[in-house]
Length: 79
Image (cartoon, rainbow, N blue to C red):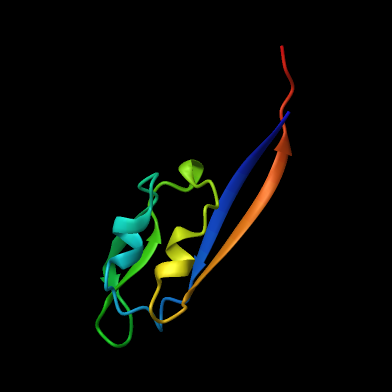
């Protein structure tokens, strides 16, 4: 049986830290970084990468389109 895992890539220089992606993530993967970008914004990042399902909620709701979502199927062996 295949399991889907996801990952996101955030353009940290264009992210303005609006937090819309943070609240839209059903698995609580995304958080705002304590670091800031060159514009002084705390940017989004994957705080819990193992929990990402690749649902694309974050990419859809991002007003600036700075989030790219990737999905990959992994075969799991049944014991």
